[in-house]
Length: 313
Ligand code: XIL
Image 1 (cartoon, rainbow, N blue to C red):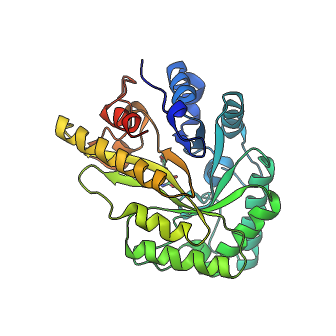
Image 2: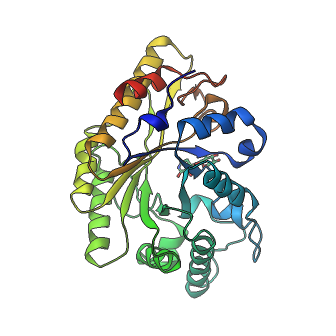
């Protein structure tokens, strides 16, 4: 047995994890650790557009509904992920459609999902990964067809559908001080100045064991100083195989540094991992040659990174 992270966190900061809906349905040990160590959950895939609406006209809510129900029953706050993301546009959506059609389709999608879970989701990633590495807007179907205002529109539509949900912009490679982080700061400042209902900034934090992001707390504070909540939304620390004790120790340090940065910033409300067990992580599929990115190993034993977090709390 190990100390449960959930019981050690300061009361104003949630500890969350991405949850795989299919695993949740079939694996009792997975459910037990989820409910024991965490008090928040993000759907790893179940709330993405391509999953929710694989064919035009029909939404498939089952996996997502089941996850929201599990969260409610187990005292986990639900973080919504994600409404607008170029990587999860259903394959039946065509760029040859008119701007009017695509804008209306996007509006209907945002409205349908946020309305369904109104009152049950504390925060939504309204737009995901809208920036390029140089800090400019990423070239996506939405930018090409609708122009840069699609971002403000998405926030307004989400706000109309659930006025109490906190609305976040989420990206990767922005946790440290980078050109992309500077671009993100410019974008959110502009959105705030024009009255767009945006409340927070999510920092995905998909890290690699031998690359520490630079000045994370200072960077997060730049956003907090503008009145925004900040959140670590998808932390994992991938290790280049083979896994060695030294690499596990470096990994533990990075987990601890990210937690310390969040705790050092007054508006950091949530610290979320992108999965909690090496048995169920996206890393081996997306980063060949890497693995072991999570807090628990594939036998569900807590790793050094877990005790590093416990020690830091
Ligand atoms: C990933 C999931 O973990 C995978 O299972 C899926 O195949 C692809 O998406 N940034 C995000 C997440 O915002 O939605 C991504 O999740 C990881 C990168």
